[in-house]
Image (cartoon, rainbow, N blue to C red; front, side):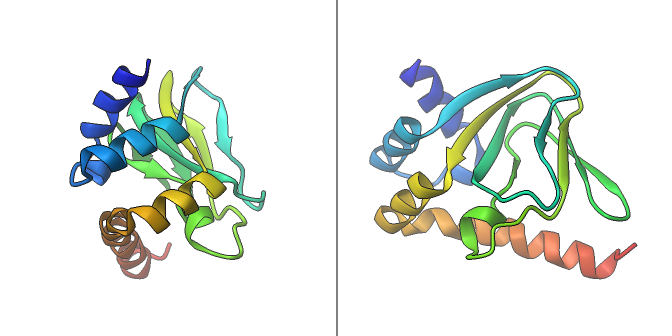
Length: 138
């Protein structure tokens, strides 16, 4: 399964620039999770413990005033990894059958300290999401 996870990670744009060592490290700390349609991955206000990278299927991110659909290669829950106050800000449900890679907060912190370059593509996506919220607040 490690080879499948490694291959899946290499196909995710967020991780595409990582070297072999970083990809192998990430594969070792991540878990592949399959969820049926309708499963709630993240509940607004709940404490965050990690992030999910979508490998197959679609997830709906239910924000306060709209819903956004995400698919393979996209991720959710990253704020809980990058802040000291990890309360979830949105509800995320599996819109279809979903296969995700789950990465816990402590493991991600270790990965980030060893491979800080992983933060750059995450920051780009976060900046785009903040910009979108500013431009389309409701």
